[in-house]
Image 1 (cartoon, rainbow, N blue to C red):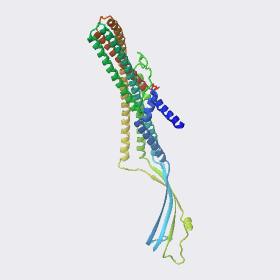
Image 2 (cartoon, rainbow, N blue to C red; image 1 turned 45 degrees about the vertical axis):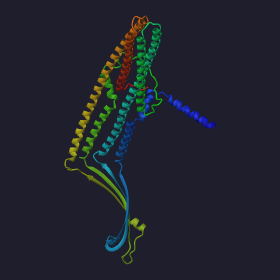
Image 3 (cartoon, one colour; image 1 turned 120 degrees about the horizontal axis):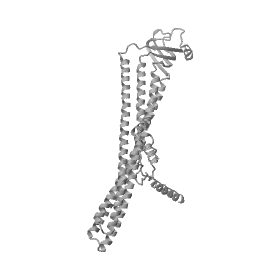
Length: 443
């Protein structure tokens, strides 16, 4: 009983520990990379590419085959000496044969190189999708932080509204304000409570989105709060060209397009290899056994198995040369197609570079706009804070109505929400530029 109680307490402790777990950004990224189905599929594609390498390597090895068979004949057939006679007999054979390619226009060599490029390409495809998933996680993580900060701000405003109701009730009971002012205070508090509920729903949705991306239960899911700090007014990069030059070395899609050109060159070499002769070899070793059941000549007997095994043992070695002369222009057209495919790969590389450059230029412009928006929202927030302080003092002295005071407070709330939104927008877009430059650290 005591043992069961200890195990039960340990189980509860484990559940409590799990429910209290707060995921760091790196843990979220690692979990997403481990569980994402697309990544698992790409890993399987990588394994297939590795098998292609093994298959291409096997082309350099010889074939080796063992064959055997038996046959019973009745009627006119050859006897042990090859003479046709009407007889019943049994014959069997056993042979070992092999062969391989000595030279085939370097097609085996180039096919092996292609298979190795296939592994590299699969690795780059895997890296590309890992980069995309990592960005999705960063965005989801920042969305949760944004929702939390919005919710915290909303709760503060709601607490202020509740205190204003208390003050309005006191002043109403003292006959200082009319009942309409008290109702306005209660209405403002109700609106702030609605905003808190909306922000809670937004936070729940942000948590759900990230939990689904990580494929973990959303119940009790939470992340570690990190301080994104006050964004600097200085851009991390002078211009988009700096980011672009770095991205050419970092982005897997660019390297993938370069490998496609190398693969196209190998395709051309493989196609040209069909113009060259093919030299191959073959080796064999075999034996046979023959037994005649009737119509034996006088004093004729069937040789023993071991005697026939020794007498009938054969070995063979051959070399063959195949020289292509004319094959309906198939090789010529195959080479031409390979050259066109190389041009397509070259234009694809330029297209990838152009798309990357345009994306980075747009991202750089987005960062500049986000920074300006953030700076403007910060200035607006400071101004609204001063206006709120002034309105609060005037309201306390009774020089403005509660309605006018609520108008000022509403502008403050809106300014704070705008500042929070613009801050996280600027932070995320800065992260995107860091990602393209290869400087994004997921810690």
